[in-house]
Amino acid sequence: MGSLSTLRFLSLESNQLTDVSDELGTLAALEALHLHSNLLSGEIPASLTGLTGLGTFSFNDTQWCAPASGAVPAWLDQIPAVYGTGFICGQALGSLGGMRKRRPRAPLPAYKLACTGRAVPLPGSISQQRRRSRAARMSSPVWARV
Image (cartoon, rainbow, N blue to C red; front, top):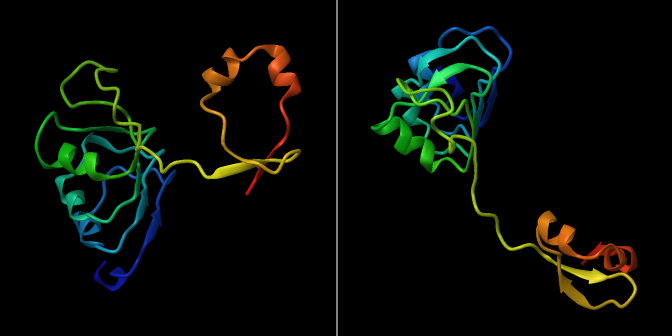
């Protein structure tokens, strides 16, 4: 895999893989690695911790588990977008809820009300929107991006 040293995106999902090569961890330029929907099982290989530039790592729909401590969980915590199984090796299923995670996002851009042209922040979460009365929702102006 040495000749792939500048590879930035690798998608190997749905290939019935049962194992990954330790050389995969040497692809230092890799920004996204998708291994979901494969036959992978056991612990996430420690060799992958060499992928320090990953922004996205998906291994959902596999039987991989994360060790409870050590280099692998520390590495997973540094990746902004991890889509995994949620399994910790040796623990009951569903014992970990943080393997699927979203990092805090940058503040939302300002929006202008189409009818007034005033810049306002985008409305909050869906739950905040649900709390508004039906009448308020019905009379809300259309949102347009600045």
